Length: 281
Ligand SMILES: Cc1cc2nc3c(=O)[nH]c(=O)nc-3n(C[C@H](O)[C@H](O)[C@H](O)COP(=O)(O)OP(=O)(O)OC[C@H]3O[C@@H](n4cnc5c(N)ncnc54)[C@H](O)[C@@H]3O)c2cc1C
Ligand code: FES
Image 1 (cartoon, rainbow, N blue to C red):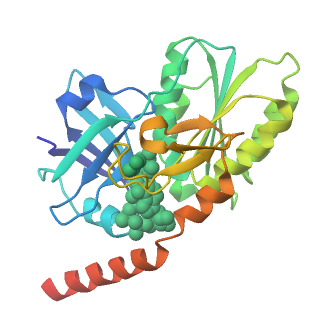
Image 2 (cartoon, rainbow, N blue to C red):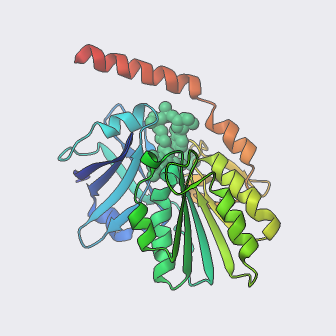
């Protein structure tokens, strides 16, 4: 169980993993996530279920390597099993038939956006996707995202693919162009700062903007309080109350500062683990 069936490098430091998990595949819905442990000494980390296939009993995740736990996971190969895997966790996305939905994906945020965009597309909504990355080489699943979009745009910070600039530029243009007020919802998923900017961009237009928050999580089941965020002046636990929230009500500065609180320990952990690896080589 939880065996890795496929592993693909989709961009530098980003891996797509297909995992054997019939129980989770049968229940998963767009917007949900899993918590995994790479090995018995590892920490639990949350990852979005980027795709699921109940008939094959598989789930797909896209992992960006940023520190010790993601690096440990990225070293597992086809045939290896995860030490632990729980899910599906979190509330599924509220999907229905809407006039038009604009889905903004930043970096690894393409992974969580894909199943939500597909669900809106299947429900009969007009789906416009804006996919952004720092550079062309960091874009992945562009064909997949385009296949569930009525319109698909790409932006890169350095202009190596699509339009040069940030995802907020086409987003604002779409909103300005929307004379018939067809855009019923904007989804923005990616780094917290990108989601914050998208929420700021949509606020003057009054279009409901959903974001999927990525605070530090520990248990993923509502018991530790590690993932707490403030939404509309109230404390909410991302793992059980989210991960999706109204982007106009999130206290972004608090989220951004809480994401940084363990930077020193994270750097120390990565250094220790890398040294341990070198010693055992
Ligand atoms: C609901 C949810 C879904 C997510 N889905 C994905 C996904 O599909 N693909 C993906 O690559 N990443 C995803 N993440 C982020 C992923 O969990 C973190 O990148 C991972 O936990 C980092 O662990 P690490 O030990 O490798 O890095 P660390 O050394 O712990 O940290 C490196 C950096 O990642 C940030 N970080 C650390 N722990 C977490 C955490 N538990 N959650 C969020 N950020 C963290 C830190 O602020 C730091 O900047 C998701 C996070 C959440 C909350
Ligand atoms: S991760 Fe512990 S309460 Fe959410």
